[in-house]
Image 1 (spheres, rainbow, N blue to C red):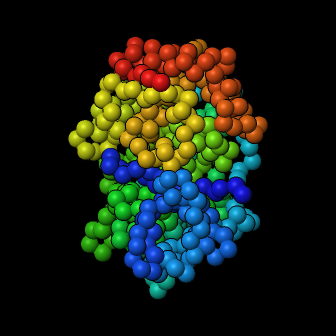
Image 2: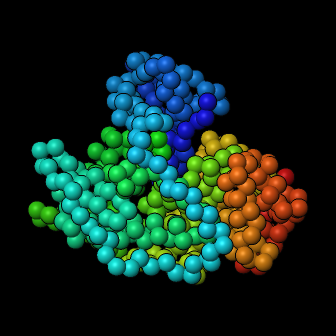
Image 3: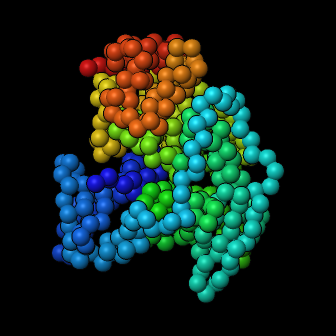
Length: 393
């Protein structure tokens, strides 16, 4: 049976991201184990253990908290007939954008404000914000611009990033006034937000958006860092076929990191100037504990083939290195490869769209090279930019 993507979490400098629903599970006797939830089957939670084994665990023997969590987010492939991925738009021939700016009005509309149910629903052009506290239209408009600009950026990339499911015509965002309520709903402690693939929703504590209480209302800090949430929005828009073996991990996380590290301000992504911020984010930005990967300027990744084909559990087990290197490699194929036209990465993504995966898809990416020859090209390209990025086998 196909394993469904359930969860993609935002990482801080010290928190790893997980593609499936990774959490510490507790049984009725208080025993704990860290594992990923793959699916619900025959009243059991099928868990992926750290050693790679799949283990069915009776839901009734889990803690009440875990049972409530499963009940809230139980996977169901047919849970919403209205939630369809957008029609394929293979825009590989479009130019790479230099700057993406969201212009105009995000079209904020108040759908519901019910204080008794703590249900406050607001919408922008592409998103529905389900909030547990009342917000003014001006506050919603302030952060909605970032959501809409990110949506526009992702769709304009000539990479056919055309996935995502809408419900009633909108991508679903759930906002929480308190971090504790966000955590109770399934948000990983220490994270700034989370994408839950089974429901195709993004959950966010309001603090991550720069929304804070002032008197009897709320205001928006427009200088709040926005590196984390765009990462999760990319996952929400990425088509399922890009999560195939050989792509899931280095490309899907590299793409999300690429968007998140591109300089953003007031509804505008400056793509043309993103190379330096990307390199700083990977090599040095995190040294002061304020985000980034802090890998230094000498990075030895090991085997490129092994890196691209490793299981996702292995990928996330060393998130600092793997997410940082995934960003460097995707950036190489986007802007530094051969004629710098992105031809090989586009061919690779076309192969994924045609149903290829694993080594078969990577053969398209190699385009006649060996992995060793590709490693040498990537190393030389970054060496010219002052990064000693090498591969030992």
